[in-house]
Length: 136
Image (cartoon, rainbow, N blue to C red):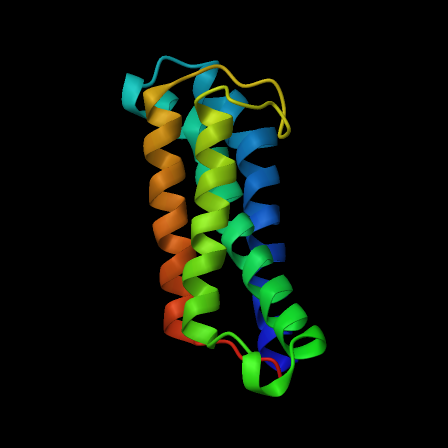
């Protein structure tokens, strides 16, 4: 349970960074004459954060469900759960970016959003792979 709480704390930090980016940095950058790379970053950074939160959420949900509802001999290995969580997050995030669904909001296709989503998925996977969270 400690590891799940660590993942939740990381998610809270990511959500705070998301709000700061969207509420303060984005308007600050877009209202001024910064280089276009800064516009791309502040417009696509929410996709990065969303991807990390998706991987972390699905990881701890998977760990909990695996511990609580799967019989002892049939449990999924934790490392497989990390991969599965990342794959499911990737399916959700990328199908949203490619306008296959609009469950996360009204998206407009942007290749930079896709790039930042992929980087966020990779970062989320790296976090769980490095932490190796377990449900105790």
